[in-house]
Image 1 (tube, rainbow, N blue to C red):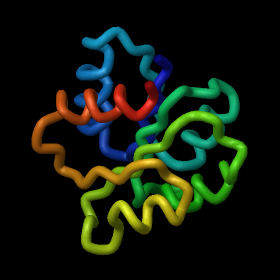
Image 2: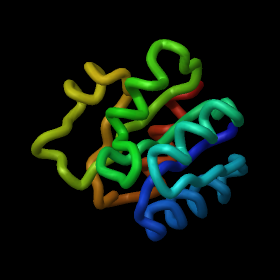
Image 3: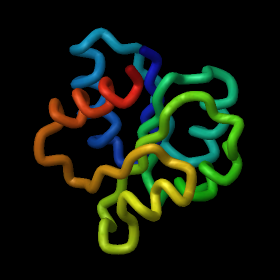
Length: 117
C-alpha cells in the first residue's frame, strides 16, 4: 500500500513512516499541507495521514482542495482533539480521526490497514 504522511513534525513523520515500512508499505512524506497536496495529486496514495495544523495549508484546507476527487482514504490527525474529532473529520471529508500523541503506533497501523481493505 502507498501511504502519504503529511505532518510538519519530523518525529511524527519518522515514527509513522518506520511503523508502516515495517509492515511493508511504501511511505511518502510531506512537511506541510501544500507539499502534501502536490504529492497527493502526483502520487495517488491509497491512504493519507493528514495533520490538522500545518504551515502553508492546513489539513482542512487540503481536504477541501481534494474534494470528492480523492479515491484513497484519509486519516486526519491532530493534537487538538478538543476542536477536532471523528464527527468534524468526517464532515471535512476524512474517513477517520486519530488524536495525537499516539498511544500505540502499531495499533494505528492496524487501524489504517483495516480502513483500506
